[in-house]
Every structure is written in structure tokens, then in C-alpha cells.
View (tube, helix red, strand yellow):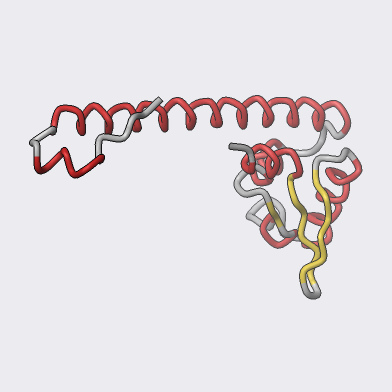
Length: 126
């Protein structure tokens, strides 16, 4: 638990730099612990998702799963690369992931984008 050392300007007026440095170090440590925990949770979710997809759709490339973990939302065009050149094929993969309840479609203007539900929820947690 980080304790504020800023009460009544004690850092500068009373030259309380040691407590300020300790405060900053504690804040950095808490942030590092939180971030490491979040990264590990995302890694576990990725591995769980990859295993499910490999079981249900063994021909789907790992790169597609990696792509849906870059951001919580993805569009079919975002899947296009040197190996996957067709928007229709990209849509097919996203619909397959939707049927596995990994993605949820959302209409934005004329386009349908897909939300990685579990990743979104994980990133929304504090």
C-alpha cells in the first residue's frame, strides 16, 4: 500500500526526499506487479484460445489467433496479409471464431468488426 508523502509539502519544505523516493519505488513496484499479472492472464487466455481453435479448426493458422490478441477489436481487413489476401476468407475465419464464442460481431457503420470478448473483459478489469 502506497502512503502519500505529499502532505503539507513535506518533500520540499522539510527535504523529505527519502520518503518521496520510497513512495515512487513502491508505486513502480505495484505497477510492475499489476502489469506482470495482466500479461500472464493474457498469455493464459491466448493459450486456452489457441488450444480450442486447434481442436475445432486445425487448419486455422496461429497467426490469426495472434492477430485477434493484438487489440480487443478486429476487422476482416486487419487479417489481410501476404498469406491471406481475401476479405471473404478473413470473414470466414472471423465467423468461425464467432461460432466458438471467442469473437462477437458488432456493426460499425457499414462494416462489421469483431470483439475478442474475453480479452476485452480482461483488459477492462482493474
